[in-house]
Amino acid sequence: MPSSIRHFASLAELSEAAAEMVLAAGQAAVAARGRFALVLAGGATPATLYRLLAAPPFAARMPWDKTLFFWGDERCVPPEHPDSNFRIARETLLAASPIPANNILRIHGELADPREAASQYETTIRARLGNAPFDLVLLGMGTDGHVASLFPGSPLLGESLRLVGVMMEPQGVPPLPRVTLTLAGLNQSRAMLVLISGEEKRRMLQKIMAQGPASPSPAARLDPREQLVWLTTE
Ligand code: 6PG
Image (cartoon, rainbow, N blue to C red; front, side, top):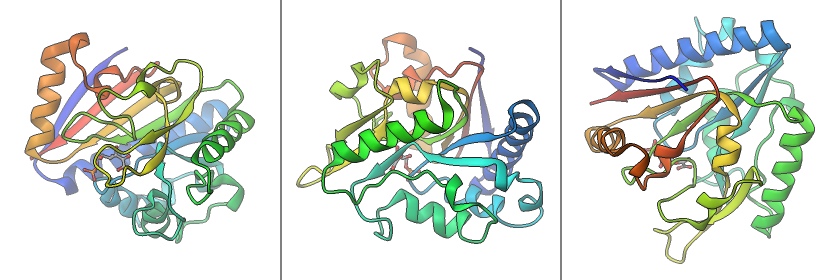
């Protein structure tokens, strides 16, 4: 599948370009299929993009009522918790936008059993999309090449049937569970946009590109059906 890298001088410029790409993907998906299945990224980098999409001039072009909002991963915390990916998206993108509540398909990180949260989320994805792919997956990337909550060396990287799994965050003390799309889930997508800010992550991307299929980084195994775009900044 075609893959390209675009480099920007600042996060603001990267986010403007990403907003244009999200809108183009959204409009194309609605024209072709009547809805836009969008997977939101966690982490801090996409917050600038989310704020842009929710404000003029971009907000008027976003097909809010036809967009289904999914998440790539979630920490096992309540939705109002500072670490919640849903909370960041709610505050920056969703709260001020005209979105039917039924279109917000979050991961229930507050459930006592993360496996139950993963299984519910998988059921939700299959109920809303059937076997159709996500139209666009947004991702960030860690300096170790992790994407969503798929970290290097995780046994979950071998999962080929389930779309959603549970992962223990390796840096957490004690390790904290996270619910995440698997590679099978992420790659069941038409297009992917990976937002990478900072020199260290940019170097990691260069390493991934140089190593090719030999790379141990989960990011090296991203393989959407139509298009993979990496956006980088200083
Ligand atoms: C999360 C993520 C994770 C994130 C990267 C990059 O929930 O934290 O989904 O994969 O995208 O760690 O995070 P930053 O954008 O904050 O650097």
